[in-house]
Image (tube, rainbow, N blue to C red; front, side, top):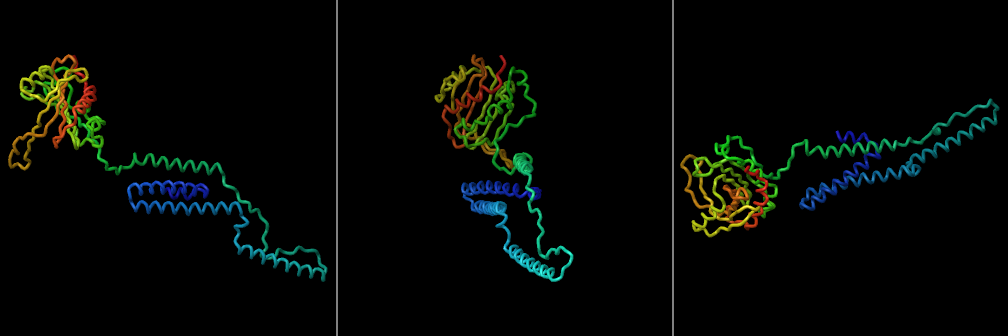
Amino acid sequence: MLGFLLRLLPFWVREPLLIAIGSVLGVRVMYLAFRDDTWVAAGLAVVFLALTGIRVRAVVRALRARRNPDRAAPSAGVAADAAAQTQTQTQTQAAQAQLRSQPQPETRAPAAPGTRTARDTTEKEPNAWGQAVAAVAVFGALALALWAGPRLLPSDDKTPQSASCSRGTEELPKAYGETTGVVTGDELCEALNRPDLAQLLGTPEEIATAASGSNDTAWLTDGKVAQPEAEVTFDTYTVNVSATYNELSIAQYVKLLRTGGEADFEPLDVLGRPAVLSSDHTMRFSISLDGAGSGGPVEQGPLARTLSVALDRGDRGGYYDITVWSTSGALPDDSVLLGVAEKVLPTIPERAA
C-alpha cells in the first residue's frame, strides 16, 4: 500500500523523500552494526546507502536535463533534423525552377515530408504548493505509522519485566477487624515494591523476580495478633517487611535481647521512632512434591539482618520488621537497611490513634 502511494507522488516529491528515508535507515543500521558487531546489519546498511546513492544520481541527472534541455536532445534527433532540412531545400529549389518555365497560378507548395511544424514545447510546470502539501502529508503519515505501530502491534520485546504485587482475594482473619488501623499485605507489598528498591539495595541493575503480600497472624497468639507481611525477591537479596500489632514496645524488645544474652544488636532511632538492629538465622526446609515423604528436616539458613521500628513515635506497642538476607549469606551494610526503612515506612498507611 505504501509503495503504491509513493508511485503516485510526483518525481520531485517521491525521489527526495526516498533519499531522506534511505539515508536515515542506512546510517542508523550502520551504527547498530558497529555497536553490536553484526556483519549482516552492516551489509543491509550498505544496500540502503547504495540504493540511496543511485537515487541521488538520478535526481542530479534530472536537474541537469531540466536546466539545459538543448544538450539533453539525442544525437539521432539532430541527424534526422539535418536530413529533413536538406530534403526540404532540394524540393523547394525544384518547385521554383518549374514555376519559372511555366507560368501558373500562384500555389502554395505543400509541406515537405519530414518537416516539423512549430508547436509550443513549453511544458507545464508542476504546482509547487501541491508538491509541498503532498510531501507534508506523506511525512505525516509515516510519522503517524511510526508512533502508532508499537502501540497497536504486539511487541516482540523480550526484556524481563519487574514483578508486580498481586491483589489477594481471600477473607481477612478476624484479628484484622478487631485491631484499629491494620494495614494489609497488599498495602505492604505496594509500599515495598518500589521502582528504586534495587538501587537502594546497591544492585541497581537487578529487577524484582517475585513480589507478594500475605495477611497472616503472629505465631503462638491463637490468631489474635495481626501480622501482615510482604516480600520482594531479587537475584542477590530478598527483602521482607512485616507489621506486628501487639503490645510489645521496642524498649521491651531491647530488654528481651539483653536478657537473652544477645550481643549483635544496636538500639537507634529511625524517622524519630525507637528502633533496633539485630541479626538471626533464617530457617531452611524442603517439601517433597512426589508424595514419597514429608520432605527434609528443618535446617539453619543464611544469616538475616532485621531492623525493627516502632509503629509510632510514642512506642506504645507494635513494630515493623524490615529483614534482608541472601542465599549466599552476604548482607548489605546497615546503612542500606536504614535507607530502605526511610523510604518504605513513610509510604505505609499510618495506624489510627
